[in-house]
Length: 566
Image (cartoon, rainbow, N blue to C red; front, top):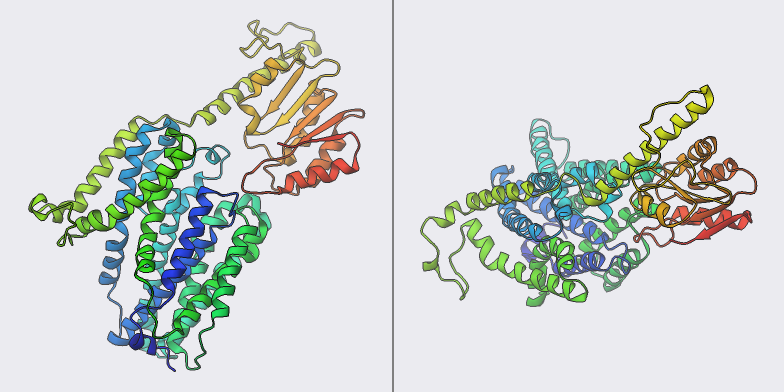
């Protein structure tokens, strides 16, 4: 049977609503309870595959019918679908962000610009990899998904237009076959870039997760499937086994994989895309069935649920603590989904004709519908200006790290002055300051049996507190310090007389090279009879961190190493 028979037999593909509900379900569980489903982001892969498939399939139908693509109608349709929800999301976020910690308003103007221009994915690549961002989430970070999808719509539609013109001049093959070949090449190129990026996972992880170059693979996989169905001549029957197995495998992957697990990027994304494509293909073979109205309603609500839940989830619990905060976030998400679909979207798109009972048409001023999009944009500009004006220059944690880093630099300068005095036998004027402002005499802090702590940005903030309240303890911490820097720090501390008999190593969360090698180099650098204490790295998204595994392995090998779990 020709794949075009789908057009006549079904106006929609049975099962896609179920796929959307499953996808948004594991995404929401991942966001609310990341420890339960650490790989719930595979639901995004499912959405990408469905979007790539539907967009390509409908465009190929238009090409068959008219011989071309109306880009104006194509972009207009997607604008009317996407803009209303995004505008309401931004307004919601800008209102709510003024009632929570100022940390969430830092760079809010840049966040809004990235969201409104659909470049959130690249904004996150540029700014989302710092230690501080793990604690203060960007309130529009989840719109990276829309950014990638919009980029696909633009890139793929322009490629198809170019292919149409090229094929008209010299027809190499049937157009759907040519599109299939190009989509397949682009998908494979994206998967190749995803694979290559794994060689430096720690350095490239945000690029692998957010970039168009690596995530368009899912959308082009859907496009490949659509092109295949336009050329299909050998039908096969629908299989319930494929459906059950497909959902089961993706759920299993969501339970076992994680954001920083290498297998996620080597095979995880590819498998999720392939399974999602097989589910769509399998559903196209199911004829003469209709889905329950509830499934359709929930499916249509998935877009709104995805948009509105994140800023509520991030900010509401900071206002109302405990389970109540999460319950309120869920309830508000449901209300916003209803408001968006029944009132906001019809107003913005000018389709507010059959109003719900709670709103009557005579309540809407004449001409209001035509200017509604401009009014919403104006409101966003005003709210952005207000929020940006009230925003601090940097988040409090980053400021604390910066201030303590400056204090530590002052201490090192003072220590260098002291060494210079001893070496050349003259008195170097230092203003008589021998502490860092907290009464800590840094030249006398490490005595016999003292403790030296070497850490990264995690320890910069509490550094002074530790040194003040734990006698005979010296902390050397620095933002963005990698595990491989540990050996050099130990050598410097030995030279400066700041290395105690007990050395605590709180490094390993950040590394470019092999963590075990970096730890071995630190072990070799410390003097004999030094007692080492390894503090295992903590990341809530990773049950067994590579740094912690390496530390525990070395602790079994050397009896002078003690493990302290974070």
